[in-house]
Image (cartoon, rainbow, N blue to C red):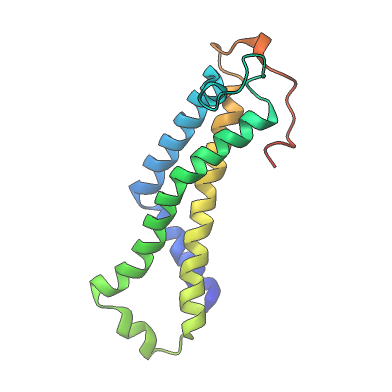
Length: 148
């Protein structure tokens, strides 16, 4: 039963415009920070640091993750409130669904969708290295390790 609740939650969130609007906003914000060097300038790093240095990637991801916490809260809260608002919470607990499966399935589905948004933001940072206005002299060699 857990798998059905988990997959329902993912399908539900992927049909909502909030996921796509937030994903686009995080992608564009990450692209802007990575391609213009704003990620390094806002943090007071010296001007000689490459735009794709691991410390810059880390700080951009930390900032975007803080913004993403608000979105994660929106996804998880909508999962819980949706059943109480529609009055279906009593129906779920009257069926042979274990409370553990119901709650963890909903939570895990919301967290997977939220993690997908962080991956989209990471793709924005990667894409920021390949935009035409990026100063090639300010880039080091590409490495997947800082992103992992």
